[in-house]
Length: 151
Image (cartoon, rainbow, N blue to C red; front, side, top):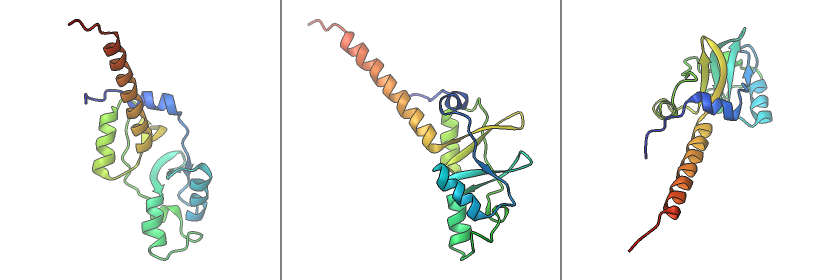
């Protein structure tokens, strides 16, 4: 398989730039309600518009549920992941896959000039790769079926 050269910018243009977020002083219960309503796996944690962390289902499971804490009494800032990996619109898809794999993460905020402009998930990237492969296969099939065999 050849190098995947498309950039995050193309992916954002396809999927949109919606960002679901929560403030750090909200409860984990409030965060879980948003995750369920939006059918998503993570929320970016914003404080005055600045990215300060990410809260995921994994954070809830490991830092709240398994420790017997109450989601209605625990604040997001107590359990969010503060060290957030991010990408830029010019990051290529292959680099995103490396980050997902090496960092064991599923979501990457997209930053441009210190501004949050979107978020991508591993699912978004995998779907894009599948679409690109289907296109390439279609092109090869067209090439092969148009090729005249002479014996």
